[in-house]
Length: 136
Image (cartoon, rainbow, N blue to C red; front, side, top):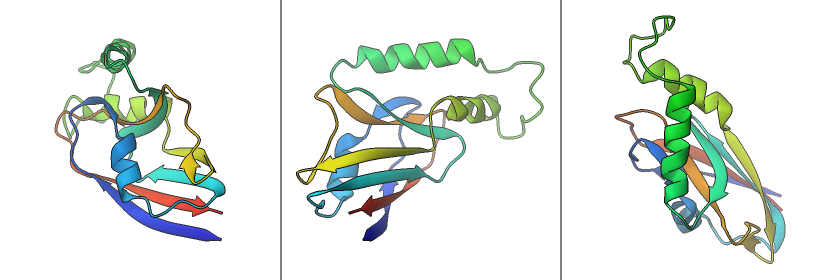
């Protein structure tokens, strides 16, 4: 059986934002076992699973991504929406547009130090839409 619904994440600041609780707050009762697929309907942000305890990890990840893919490069041609637009698209490719998380005993099977991130790569982002599909 498949259950699907839309999750709206309000605008987040640029960076790696822990959204596990925002996801869990909007999920219906989880089945005993299954898979949760989260699909982000945007091309300038990403999803990933990483450290959920120490916020310095999120700061370091933002710094690393900005060093790897800097803004204002002369070779960018996709620049109509601002200096952060093309780098946001490139950064989203490094992360992911979707995640699969096992459901065990009606809970997401995340490790003790794992959390779900919305990787926001735009300076002035809007709300983000995620399609949640629960396969049980």
